[in-house]
Image (cartoon, rainbow, N blue to C red; front, side):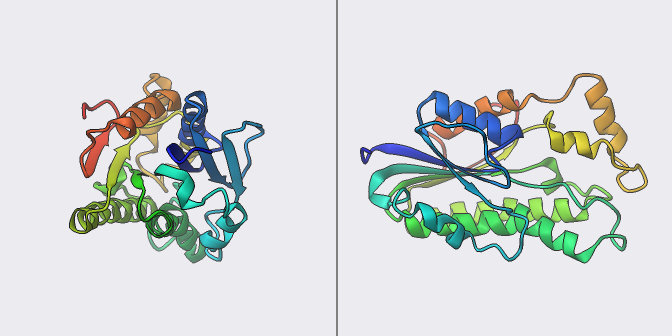
Length: 247
């Protein structure tokens, strides 16, 4: 492999937005490392996969990446992009009715793993051009009853992205950070959300109506916009944007 190639690391690459991003990258012949609970049944010379349950609080992300140590040799890559896409909306219910382990698992996949991977990325690739995309949500800035764990983890992820960008400016690292709200996507996660009881999640009717009216965003549309933003050579050190807004 030539030292000017681009590596994209995508968590949750097996479905939804992650799968749409994977397909875009492979169409561009960009090398991808996908990390997800399920492997994609696809053989492609530009694709490497790691099967891991990112909701498992016992998971050690560095150990999961060890089998690809040679592939992740820093001398190979000039640009490395990390897209922290994997996440969960569960558990959904009011505080006082949640399972403690479910809260821990939610925070682990939505917040702890993105922080661990961002930290690993900066250690592993000290001289490379780095891009980090944190997949965010309106729930990072607005309180939704029944979504205590999700709102909290997304708010934390947003702040972590801001800290990363501030630290990069101080250190002079070639790092750009994107906080991206992909819109209300038409994905299996959204389908499961619409089946939630209204007493657990009062906003559920809003999402049901959006599906009925055909207002959900296709993952491929959101993925194209996200990829365009990450490919912009003039991207600022920190960019926070929602699907459909102009950068």
